[in-house]
Amino acid sequence: MYLPVAEGLLQICGVMQGGEYVVNKEATEKHVARIQEINAYKGDEEYKPIQSLSMTDTTRVFNTNGIKGELSVLMEGGQFIVNRAATIKHYEELEQINNSVTHELRGT
Image 1 (spheres, one colour):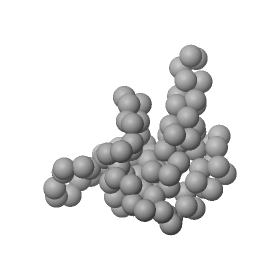
Image 2 (cartoon, rainbow, N blue to C red):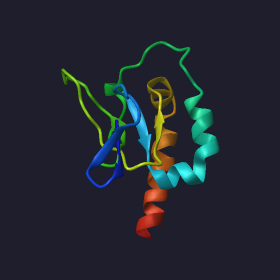
Image 3 (cartoon, one colour):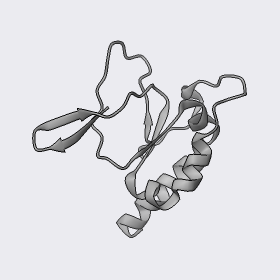
Image 4 (cartoon, rainbow, N blue to C red):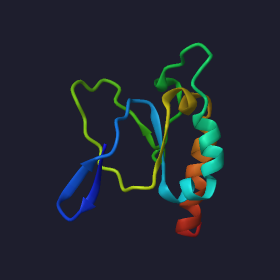
C-alpha cells in the first residue's frame, strides 16, 4: 500500500492480502472501537472463500482473486484495513458500517 505524503511523493505504508476489507476514513473515525473489535477476530472456524460473499458496487473488499504477481494500492489515509478472517465473519456488519457513513456524506 502506498500513501501520498507530499506532491509527487508516495510512501509505503503497509502490506495487504486479498480478502481484506477497506473501511473508509469517515466510518473509521465514527466506529473505530467496533471496527477494532471486529478486526481482533483472527479466525477459529473453517476457512470460507471470499467468493462466497455477496459483493456489490459499494463493497470495499480488496479482491485479488485470479491475479498473479504484485499489486499496488494507493490509499487516501485514515482508512482501516480489516483482516481477511474478520472480513469474512463480519462482512455484513462491515458493509453496514461503511455504507451508512457513505449515505450520510451523500445526504441519502
